[in-house]
View 1 (cartoon, rainbow, N blue to C red):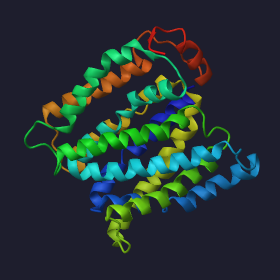
View 2 (cartoon, one colour):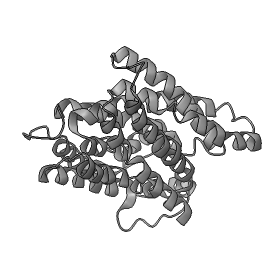
View 3 (tube, rainbow, N blue to C red):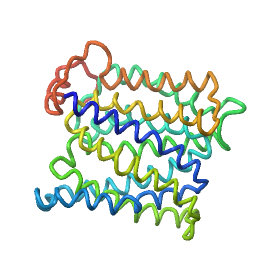
View 4 (spheres, rainbow, N blue to C red):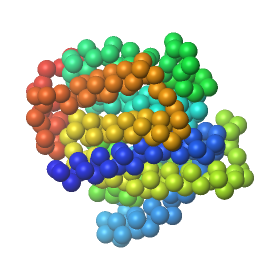
Length: 309
């Protein structure tokens, strides 16, 4: 279990670099999203080839995961890149990571898994954290438009949740690299189309604009997400979720040190409320001793007190 935990945590730290690099590129949402994926494809194909030769072609049921995951991941990238300029690199990343309490809703709707009572009880705390982090009622908040940035970041969180949902339940298991490469290829096409429709796609970006997305491709698309994709199916859901929390923490620290962002006390309080509610509602609270794999997590969850059907 130590191996997957370290892999998940290392992947989260690699992912926390993305928002700062996107901000430094000065690229708009469409351009930043469209180029970070294709820059990663050659390396991902090389990494996927040994798996493809060893495991063969992924089963047909993997294809919907790849197509849907690619479209949702592209939506997450476009909306998140827009939110970075509107509300700041650190706050936008914290808001996007509201997904750690959105995924249980998907499990409830799709898999008919019961929702723990503590999840419903902590929702007001989470929403208060979103309001404080977005700086909706605070003068001098980071970014050009905190209100729009908060909306875009929450919509990105919904897309992000849809992408993570099958990943955490072993949707890529057995063909992780191959299916993830398909996800990134689909994301390349969808993000380019989305950027063109949004009117923000630069077809002739400068080398500086391309350089920072290349760093994102290496740190996030290749290293970060591959580590998460390999580690997530081998961890109980609540542990996997908690180990993703270094993403917003790292983004806030990098945003303050590299970009000169100055989070206010209210913003820090909002971040703390979001991460605390995420930790508690996803089963990371003391007393949850389920350290087994996904199957054990699903079995034990049916024995815990829950609300709704």
